[in-house]
Image (cartoon, rainbow, N blue to C red; front, side, top):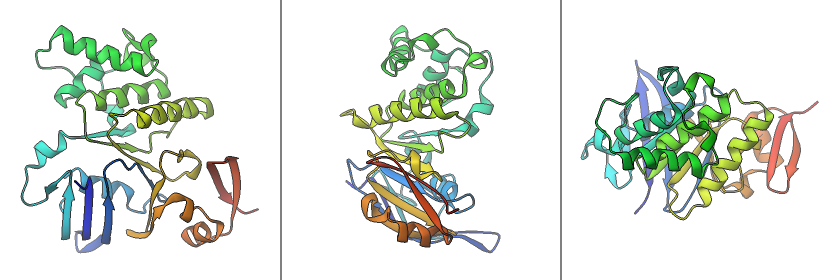
Length: 260
């Protein structure tokens, strides 16, 4: 089963074309990075995947379900989404494990009955991320990096088949970012890991586990495929349309900055 299939998908709003003729496929056991500058169309692409928007043209299939022939609310239960925008909806006094547990019910806050086993599962997810010290800690006392880990655990509570990480490193300092990236790498290597989509505009955040890359520019696909083939100075300079400089972090991670 294909995880994702865009066939000539476009999105229009108020007579303006925001995404143009997107063709893209994800196979099982692939983890993709999505790279683009602000305003390129990355978030709109995610909103199409999750059914928040409907294609104006083309065919879209997500997790074996074809748009127009499936229940979007049921499909959304199979997709986890981690975004800093979600943080503003969480009560400051909410305990970390209760935030994680809410992912079971796709709600912000707990309004349903839950079992001791379900609460234990939420705590176990935090332990698995080496975040057991967050258990019993209210959200308002968490650092930005700790909040992101809690949100990832929350997304995993429902055992999604796809997990979207929408610029998860925004607002993190250098050390918190690296700790979060280590957590994501550990998650991706788990044999039961969902398909990961990691959205960013910083090349250095794309870990080796994201060996597939989609490059979005002005609402269109600029390039896609194996990251090793796309991470060249010529290709990236064409993508950014400006001179760039490479700064290798290690053999498998690369920072791109404007040329001096």
